[in-house]
Length: 194
Image 1 (cartoon, rainbow, N blue to C red):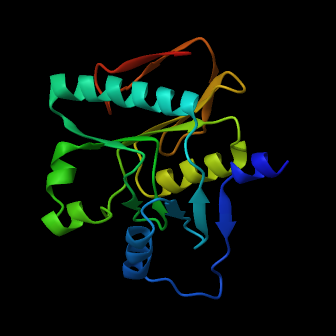
Image 2 (image 1 turned 30 degrees about the vertical axis):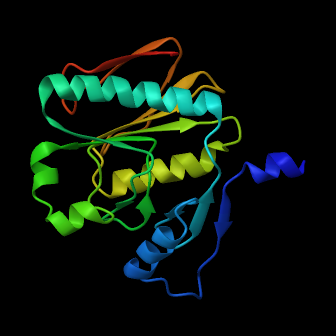
């Protein structure tokens, strides 16, 4: 029981604690061995380390997106180590993220170097064995509220993908599925399961 609890995210309620953006940045910098996020509600989330199979899936997805981006030159690809300061609130680290090049280049060098104050155009979140679905769905909604154009919540446990698009109901599709990058990532596709 203790070991399974140790692999769950720990959520700290900071309701009566003011944690400025600079303090959050310094907290993350001082605790580089921890993966920290902050929800739009102000909760501090300490994420567990990624397990082998999830890390492999994440690396595969980043590799596929990176290869597509190398061929098109349309944007920038980011790993789960990148924290984005979302315009709708929260500081989040998607498993895989992509930002259109002109939006990225519109940021100052300082903004690019810290936690970029921008929502990715595209994100992928992977549900690991220890993840409960609701917090991931809430995280995807935070991205949408901040300007996300396309998001995939890949849920191997239930063998399905939730597709998030602005101003549309979440679309749920069962495996096997061939996902399209639509007009956000023209020509990019992903066959699941991988």
